[in-house]
Every structure is written in C-alpha cells, then in structure tokens.
Image (cartoon, rainbow, N blue to C red):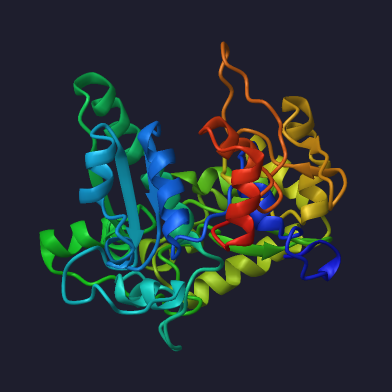
Length: 356
C-alpha cells in the first residue's frame, strides 16, 4: 500500500516497514564502474544477499567464485524461485503458483470447491525468516574459521518444508500414505466450535478440536446442563454429525449474537477455551496490550512525515532495539563511497556516467 493511495517512489508502506534502520546505495551493476564499487564494498563486507534470477550474478561477473576471491570470509546468500540448479531453475513463479506447486493448496479450502490459497505473501515472509537464521549461522561459522560460503535458498523447497501444514502433510503421507483433504462444509470433526463465528459487533475465532474441552464450552455459553446431555454427548452425535453440529451451533449463536467480540473472547478465555476477537487495524492500534509493551513507535520520515510503526518483535535486555526510518533511494550513496575513499569529484563523475 502507498500512503494516501499515492504511488510515490518513497511512500510504499511495505518498503518503509521492512527497511527501517538501513542505508541505501544505488549502483548500476551493468556498468564497469558500478561493479567495481560493489567489489570495493565486498572487501569489507560480512554478508551479501541477492535475489536475482539464477545466473544473473555470474553474467555480471559477480558470482560467488569471483566475490570469494575478493573476500574469502564473505557469506553470500542467493534467494530464488527454485534454486540455482535443477530442471525448474529458470521457471517463473508467483506466490500463488508456489503455494500450488508446494502441495499446501491441495488441502486448502472446502471439498465442494476448487482449492484456494491463504492470503498475502506468507511464503516470502517465511523465506525471509529462514534466510536470516541460515545466513547468521553461516556468518558465525565464518567468524570462527575465517571461511565464508554460498547459501542457496529456494522458495519452492521452503514451501514444502513450511510449518504452515507442509511439514505435517509430508510427515503424514510418509507414515501412512494419506493425502490431506479439503473439508466438507459444515461437517467438522466434532461439536467443538472451531473457526470464525459472528458476534454482536464483529467476529471471533475459536480454535481447538480437543473433545475434552466440551465442558468448558458449555460453561462459556452458560449452559452447564449440556455438559452431560445424552443427546449431544452421544458418540455418533458428538463426532462428525453435521445435523447435530448445526443444532448445537444454533444454541451457540443465541449466546454469541447479543455479545461483543471482546466480551466473547474474555468469556472464552476465562474458561480456558482458545478464542480471539477478529480485530480491525483500528482495534489493533488501540489494543491496550500493545500499549503496555510500548510496541508501536512513531518514526518520522522526510516524505511521509511521522507514522506509527511496529516495533521489535522481541525484547533484548542488554541491547534494546532502536527506532529508525527507512532510507530514501540512494540517500547514503555519497557517504558510503566516501568511506571507501571516493572523493566528491569521483562521485559526481560516477553519477554523470550512469554508474550510480
């Protein structure tokens, strides 16, 4: 999203969020001078991360073989669709195609419709997390023995091994050959409320299939008389009977609809049944829990002005996180080149020659 729906180069919300506390240098790697500057940067760098299509860095004369001769301790991480080798290496991909080919979409959706994908770019954010941990592991190795290495991260393989049902489905298939299936609408495994339900002012999400929690559900909806009700607790009715489930959900809706989503969540949590209110972004920003942790921070930016940003997802007692803005495109080019020994005249010449 762009601030104010203005497709401005410096107003991408995703860029501003992902690039806080970074510096920005622009280089034209198709120019000889631009490649020379990158080699100068690599000489003192610990890590280089690139996400070009496989082969691009080699064609530019900047493959790992070249860079490792400049800096033997360099860790180079290459992120691509299908990896640097293999029959799919040069295939194009979108997040949707990735989700389909990785096997997860096969079980997503309902049985009476075509498969669907989960929202947003889940896999690419997962890839970023794996990339960070793998790269830092390689960097620690380089600190110990002085030898770097080239990391090849393929989105395709990360999708298959993703904790978002990928690992579970693969393990199940290997053990018993069963393929995960899309659910039949309204079936459910038992009477437990699972999924999204309406309330008086929005929705809540319940999540557990543990039949031992039946008593908690009955107390939540203030119907203790149902705990040992022979109709609902009879095995053939409690497990996988859509008609009986619909009857119980009628009772559940009578309790849900007069209450707010916050009231439902609090009542559910009070009896130990997992439930969360479906919060709008306005709800999230106003949530008192985040306020108590001082999670959202205001960061100023020369183009967007001050905005509230998500803070660090963890707290370190000795090295606290510092709030900082994302850079403007190329904002630090001159300063970084000066650190490498380039004069102001050199930088001007490089700009006029199209290297920056």
